[in-house]
Length: 232
Image (tube, rainbow, N blue to C red; front, side):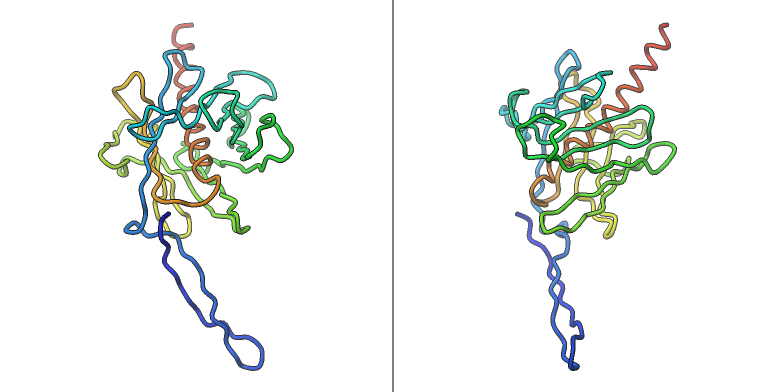
């Protein structure tokens, strides 16, 4: 697990005394362990597959649902098929600017009542930035933003100035880049690589996967609609 810097401050209490309050800051780039995951796609675009980098063991299966009422557009499973527990879902309504993200450790249906819901909110007309919150185990709410990037890439990868599918996940308070997604331009098997710059608690990886795939899938569907219109 990534180490964290510690900050201490003296806070006045009653009778003129002070009490030292210790706060844990986000991991610095020098202290983090970077973890990378390959996102792959089948020949027919019905699902995404997530693997730890250089591994043949699938970590997550992500199903895609198109135009199915009341069913999540993306569902992230804790295993290699739809029989595994559901960890996260994404609703991508065309009528709004935002995504509805559900996070759960339940093995029940994707619409389970015990799922915690958050928004992935579009911040600009061009869709270059989306804000969200990660609910931490200690009750704090970590404000983050996916920002489209041409200057930050997964280690040993390169972004393209023409790509709409390269993203960085930024801590809105510190500006620290906590995760990256770099699109794979020349592969018919691989969608791209996710890099997470540290260990950030239960559920964080799943939030990264479901939200960045929501952004990727949104662009894919837009391009697909454009191709349909061009040939109609």
